[in-house]
Structures are given as C-alpha cells and as structure tokens.
Image 1 (cartoon, rainbow, N blue to C red):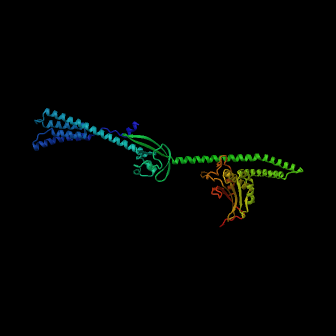
Image 2 (image 1 turned 135 degrees about the horizontal axis):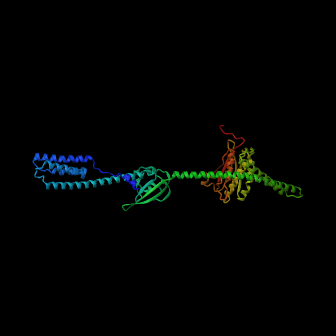
Length: 476
C-alpha cells in the first residue's frame, strides 16, 4: 500500500535550476552598477545597500545557493572597485556578510517551508483525485449518508441505478430513493426506484466517523440480472427434471401395461369360467350373471386402456373412428360415477342435441373425461354444495366442446401456469400426472385442454374442443 501512495505522491526533487545561479550572478553585478550610479548621480556613498538588496532578491528566487552567489559577486566586486572608500572597511564588510548570510539562511528556510507546503498540497490533491476516481469508477453503488439519513455523496454507479443526476441525489433522504425503506438494512431487498423500476439489491454498510460526526458508507450491488438469471436456470433445471421424470414415468407405464396384460387375461378367463358354471345351474340370480358380464367388460376395457396408453407412449397410430358424442359422454359418466359417488357429488349431464359424431379413439377421450370427473369429485368433496356438470356443446361451425364444471374452490391463482405440468398437483396426495396425460392426449387429437375459473357452479371449468362430422370453418 505504501508503494501505491508513493507512486501517486510524485515526490519533487531539488527545485534550484542553473538559471537561478545566472540570475543571482546578474543580480550581484547589478547591485554594484546601481551603487556606482547612485554615487555618481547623488553623491550618496552606499556601496553595500544594493548588495544586501540583491542578495535578498536572489534568495527569494533561488534560496541559499543563489544568495551566496549574489553575496560573493556583490561583496567581491565592491571590495575590488571601492578599495579607497571609507565605508568599505573590514568591520562593515563582515557585518554585511553576516547579515546577508542570515538573510540567505532565513530565505532558504522560508523557501523550504513553502516548497514543503506546496508538496503536501499537491500530494493531498493527488490523493484526493485518486480517491475520487476510485470512488466514482466503482461498479458497486456507494452512498455516504449522514446522521439524518441524508445522502452527502454518491458515485456514478448510484446515478445510473436511480437514473438521476448527482445533484438530485445529494441531499435527498433514504426514503426518497428507497420506497418503503426508512433506514438502511443489511441484506437483499426489493426496492423501487423513483422511475418506478423494481430492483433487487444487496446492501451493506460501515460506520464512518468524521470529526465526531456519524456518517455511514453504504454499498449497494444491483443483483436483479443475477437473480433473474438464477431463477431462470432453476426453472430450466426444474423443467428438465420434470421431462426426465415424465420420460421415466412413460417407461414405467409401458412396462406396467405390458406386465398387466397377463393377469388381466387370466381374470377374463376366470370370469368366463364362472359365467359358464353359473349358466349350468338350475337357479341363477340374473344379477349375478349381469355382474359377471359387467366385470368381464371392465377387464376388457382396462386391457384396451392399457393398450391405448402403450400406443400413446410409443407414439403409435391410434384407431380413430366416427363415434357418437352421446355414447362417449355416457360411458365417461358411468366410469367416473364411482369417484363421484364416493364424494357424494351430484352429476349433471348436458348434451347438445346437435352434437353428432367426432373422429377420435373413444377410449382416449373417455380417459380424459374420466380424469376430469375424478378431479372435479376431489374438488367438491369438502364443499357444502357438491355439483359436477359434464356437457357437450356445439358451436355454429360444428365444433363440439367437452366441458367439465364443478362447484369447488377453483384453481388457485398461483397454479394457473403449472396445473398442466407433470407432477404438479393442487391435491396434497396427488401425483400430478392426470392432467399432464390428459393434456398430451388432447394435444395429440389436435386440440388444447384449458382450465379456468368462473363456472356457473362457482368452481373450475375444464374444456377441450374437437371438430364434429359437420364441422365447417366459417369463411373457408
């Protein structure tokens, strides 16, 4: 650090230059000439007067060395030219020499003091300029604040942060610049600058006592861009994790579907065997036969769903056909009836008479509707009014919208952008895969699954639209 300040101080060398000696010699000769001229013109015999004056003048310009040069020339010349002058005596000469030496010594001391003063002034000026440059070029915002929270100094970074001129900042109080902050608190804060921008900054401060007065140096680092980049990176990493988990889930689902085929086939065989046994008995309750038939149908349906899921995960083409919308709605209502019954919810079904057929794989659409009905049942489970509505509506173009509404609490505001992501659920025990799979199915059908609040029953509304058989885009 000492070397750093030495480079800044620029120590000055000997200020005496050769020209000063030439001027001193000239002054000595001039003193002799003036003495002779005054003696000739006025008759005044003052041989040493101008010598003393010349020495004083030389000392004022060049210090002790210049004074001695002027003294030697002035006294030597006087002794040589005025040997018969009664004033030029040994005693007078010694007195003049002593007086001139005293003047020279005093002048040298004065010049040294003045040079020291000048050197210290320049040194302080250089240090002040360097400190000001370091203060002003710092990338961190630096404020110096007085005891009354008024800003007494600010660097250029502070002017850029607040987008204000230095004159507008100096003298302002902290609350004028930091909305909602009456004092400086260490840490990360969100501040609003006078131009309305919200910035995330990190504050630190140190005490700065000066002449008994209390000041504080406040360092502010704008970390808005850093924090935004970190949040974006975290979001990207989260999305990558979700993609990885979704891929793992797809592999797991495909494996499970493959492994369940055999037990489902065995269950079908056992059910058919039980049906055969019952038909051979003399007295068989019709309900038992119907139950076994329904069980066999559900097993076959489960196998079909698993096959469709395997084809969907493997991106295989599905078997699309023109299917009656009413049949899709009623089958979905029947399949989702158990979840609605467990929630003690009332299902209202509304089918537009104009709704005809859609070109889809019916099992896929039913799977989406069943997922939405199960979610709606969970949404109304703890509500006083438990209503779920499943609708099919047709617009003027012939497009058919499938809509599921409920009387639940609706979608939380902070979940609108997340509910369709994998593994994101509003339920405490939810896996967060139902809506994600439904979204992929609907997108594969060329549509989009949407979720909003504002149901006529007071809860959420989920909807997707498919072209009907008589679909015709207006203006086409």
